[in-house]
Image 1 (cartoon, rainbow, N blue to C red):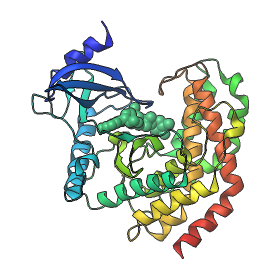
Image 2 (image 1 turned 30 degrees about the vertical axis):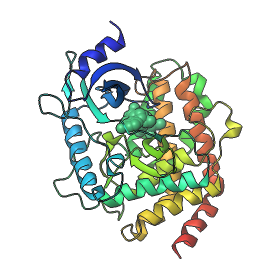
Image 3 (image 1 turned 90 degrees about the vertical axis):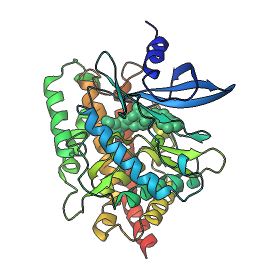
Length: 363
Ligand code: ADP
Ligand code: GN1
Ligand code: MG
């Protein structure tokens, strides 16, 4: 059975306009299966984004979809008076049975969004202006969700940023060595073990719980192709209660280095201070008035913490035989781990200057 005929059957369950033409895999996400589907109406193409939610990672897809419905409705209401409001928030396309998803014969959950046209995601930041836009888009996202009415959102992945638990999982993977790969990763294992203290410092002291995105990587913001404005925050599966600095930390991880996450030439990996500064300015500008002093004080540390956290998650997955992240080559997760650890070192060298930037922007 071809992928496309399967998609042809799935699309019949949603309220799409036009007649289904074709669909192709889309984007560089590590988790879900994402397709761009094309329909024809009156001789013109209409596109939709169709996704199969990864069932081994998201154990309660209906609760996750309830979060997304609440978050997108809340954002849409606040964007209603802005020009181009339908490009500023994801819009779910309902299934024909009235639900926000369709469950296929294998039990997989599918959902569909309006495809946002003329918008681009990047895997590396090319300019300070782009970094500013990324910081500002995620900052505004937090700002607009600060007044989401109760109840509390569901935790779609419990303990998602619980770094001590992530570290314990790494220690277990090292001990088990299920895939027999530990000897290929000796240097990375030693690097991680030597920095255990980073992982055991928990960020929750004195911090307010907020609605946070939790996966604020660069390619989870759509930038307008014409103006470069960060118009829409996407990939809302991990939007749940959390702490604001974690979100900034993942922006530092993904936006400040010129190298791809899986770059093998580690000489290309480094934190670029001007890009960090632009990211920080964008984020502080958008969160002005609601971010507390305690949160601001953790922004730099959080960049190091989240980079280290994702590095140990890649290493854990490598040692466990690549069971979590989608991989495209042997050793892919180890390559990803190496860039993260190289970036941790680069942050360690520049932490003081980064802290100075935070203080000077606030003054
Ligand atoms: P994953 O969870 O696997 O990372 P994403 O939800 O981030 O999946 O989607 C993968 C990619 O698809 C994104 O990086 C982006 O390029 C593109 N994308 C997702 N949603 C839309 C949308 N509504 N309109 C246009 N492009 C989108
Ligand atoms: C995954 O879904 P995607 O590709 O945007 C992962 C993040 C990691 C990221 C590393 C649900 O993000 O936590 O930081 O890969 N998402 C989940 O690139 O685990
Ligand atoms: Mg994504």
